[in-house]
Image (cartoon, rainbow, N blue to C red; front, top):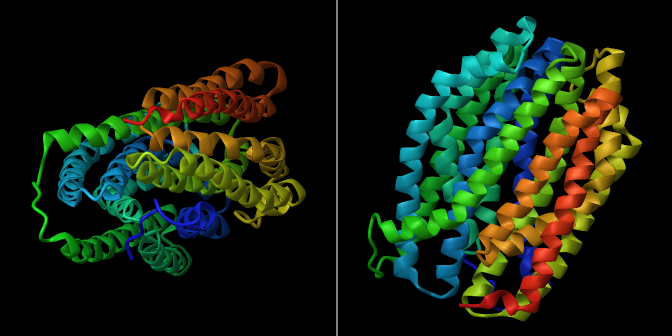
Length: 443
């Protein structure tokens, strides 16, 4: 069902739209975590470490898919809110064609560069082969990942956050089932987990794309182009900063992963488990940010400054409510959380994961305000403000990780997260309140 986010009580409208997106992220993260959890149960620390080393590498390529999703979603939301349905269809077709071309390029580049990258990261020989196998199979699924992200971005931009949720639930359950079959029954190890993800992403992409094509028949009387350079420029005006932001964050995580790898396999395993849990929590908050972006974009298109302010307020409150259980669980049950991934775990791996969660989880409440203000900046297409805020987070985290590791060891790396989050949050809020005072400079 398509939804106009420019009418109705802001809290109810935003929460009704964002909560299905949040649930979608829950299931998406569950099936991302399923690989590590199931492999950890059957293959131990080495299996978890192999997936963990490949994770920041895959995130570099995923950054393009996520950024393209953000770009098309904001632009299409703006056109949908303004009821410019012909231009909206053109933007949709342009987004799909461009992302298919990009995914083909990344498929070739990814397969060519996978081995050199994991060598540069000082990956231990004991997990090198499994890491490379997992990464190569993941790269083969790029077209599925890219097309699926565009399709969900289109659904979200027209106010339908429920359809992607239904497909993601099915995909997540299917991935977990295939993980148990390939890893548990067939004993394919890390490679089996990778093929399970490949199959699940392919099915989710096909189903989501099929339903979207049927949905677009609603606007069949509106003329559109299959490709437009103008639409491409508008989409990537928003998408490129998001892509760069995600990419630089991922590159920064590679630098941090290289630091972690220097501490050996046990620390890698503990960090891999904890960072998966941390990513779960942060991505759930970012999902509320994405919902706020769509809400903001539609209201920005009709000049509703007061509704954008309400969106910031209620988006922040919703993000705060979501952060509470994550922070509580990770602070009180940090040891149990890390053990989710491995039944047999060394003391070093357990302490590594536990320390990471205890250090970063209290700062989820700081992140709430950053992600929502970033969402408003992106929704109003103030991309330079958005880029500056997000890049500062990355730069600070990497710099402080390398500064503090010398005196504090691995804990110094973990401390770089809250330092980066706090300082970049201050910057993002400064931008938000300046733009709010200027009524977001509606065009």
